[in-house]
Length: 441
Ligand code: GLU
Image (cartoon, rainbow, N blue to C red; front, side):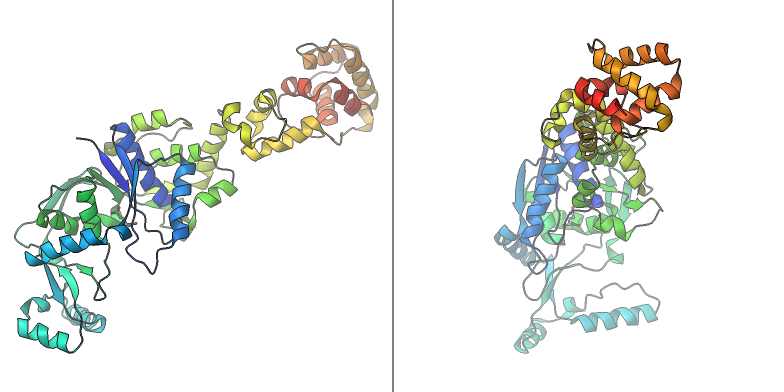
């Protein structure tokens, strides 16, 4: 059996961090099992779906490195839904209902007044052919409900949540199609999961009760259902489902200088029993991915943790992985010299400026003689492979200075700053001419 997973966003907005996590987990599972990862655009709702979001979703997945093996679009599959709908209707699994939204609302209120759960009373099932004809003669078009089987409990072994059990009698027959013929999410998704050969549905636990309903749809269509993994939702670091997380997406991450590898490393492990580690390569994340390691508690997303993972990943990136994002002229040696000082890659440009100049040297009056001597030594010493050690050794001997008094005035004159990359790595890149100029008071 080839594993097939699918990520099924509705193109009504850009992906947020929760969607990204779902996409990643579907991708990781497909990679781990040698299977396929599909993108399914859930665009049955023509009014709310927008092409710009379809494009944005693809671009975001590309940026995250989550390549898909194929793509389907629900809006191109209406003929299939229609055919399945007809079969299900002929077999009595789907029935027309005529209540208006107001009537349904009233029914719910009456039920609530009697202390009963708001379950649809199936009044439409009691209508005779004559009743229906009369309603339709009045111009009332039906919406359509899927008739749940009440004979046996609905059960499955969820890969994250363990054994699940629902009683169909405690649930309303779901509306699957509106009076105008448009589709709600539930049935097309089940039809597609069958038709696309999806073996694992990986999604958020907000879909658990949908799964109970969809399992009956799979059965009604004579299909073996896929396996299900419903993951605990992502919450903000304050522990709540936050509005901010709902709008936090790839664009914001890019603006903050967060690398896709950092997002993958964090979201692959968040909510699992494995520690979050700055793993830039996909391989180890794929190898350690396992639904059994997920807990039931909400996973906490913390920006500070993401930033920390990001920084550590940047420190491990090779020149070739970043070359196209560095200033023109900046080479491997420069990257390697400044990399340990970066929190985001964009900061490399600042250090490139320090190497290239111009730099406003910071020189205290008390250090003028010392720096005059430093400039003289720098001009004469054998620049060789390690000019910083040659320079500081000579100055230590001539001035008697040591530690901070020796190093800091040199760093401030050479870079204009108190802190920065290792001077031994930086000075050869600054070069003799610029060094002498900056050291000269
Ligand atoms: N379009 C649905 C959503 O975004 C897909 C849910 C599913 O994975 O089946 O919630």
